[in-house]
Length: 400
Length: 80
Image (cartoon, rainbow over all chains, first blue to last red; front, side, top):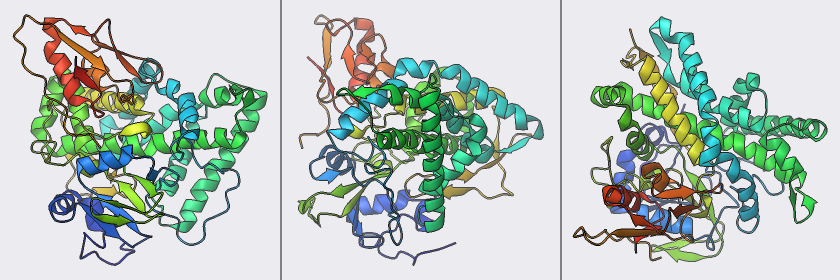
């Protein structure tokens, strides 16, 4: 359903929730890159949209003029609800240094290369178990039956919360990110997450476990325990940032393989192709756009940006910039020069990037091992979500 | 901003060994180098990448070293 007026001028009046943009933003970015490389809109507040690699990465590195205090792409409609329990938002993603620096250091070891290797076996068995559930049917929704089910359970494992609540967690995260322009759903998602984690924190104070939440509660910084609001914010961040994003990357990759038989066959037959292919799929179908807020009036790239304006960190468009990538709209599975920024650039590089890569690789390996031949079910629609995170939400496939 | 395309590695004559380094001020922990050439790089718990040993690249790994240079999103790796 179209909630906003159709866009006729993308350079001066863009809308990332426009259905045409959500379904296929690539041509729009191509046109903007040559005609108006940093687009602007006044829909949902004054907001800028860079489309060139050099601009996106330069802005990501200029943390003095472009703050992370506001990172959501779709601002709250109407009155901002009181959230006294999260005065700092979701650090480190919603923070600038110095708060960003030390809160990020608390989280990073949980997502190190070494630690992520220890999550691989459970991820593989989870993927295989999901496939067991539908392989005999000869059809599945590769998004909702598979991709959507994977990251949320791995994140639940890391946080030490119940995987039985996976669908509830997914619902809250979608309320916050995907249905961000629906005021009631967004409030519902935020409240659900907060109330849940407040209860979990209280329980772990009494019965600590071997999990991220418990460790945060037992960590001292400068001789004092971390404030509850920071623990809550970090826990909610890990869930919010680790679910929609990776699920969208898995879904988009399966969509690509369902619609590109040559690539599908190559990946199914050559396991060594996987490492470079994962990076290429991340480049071509980067799911995540973040926001920054302009700290002081500044002219950037000829654009008069005002303090309080937002800038959408269009990493997906940067990754399609022909100035950096040859044939950017082609998926070249063995692309050797691939300096993509699917996980961002600069100090806010996705803290979970090692985990996301592992989940994407294992999800594709298990799918291709069990279901090497599959295609879209033309009788049903593929649907896409967009805005902060882009990826398929319904992806019906057949593998008779 | 000084963030232009990274310097292309010049082809070597073979006699002079290639030596690489990671700029710790630029590295943000993407770990692309480690993924492409785990023999040449190590990453710590915070994602910071460092070269193994003094960064001298064995001839058989030169191609991988160049790949690591060409794939770092932060332009943090270069030839010494």
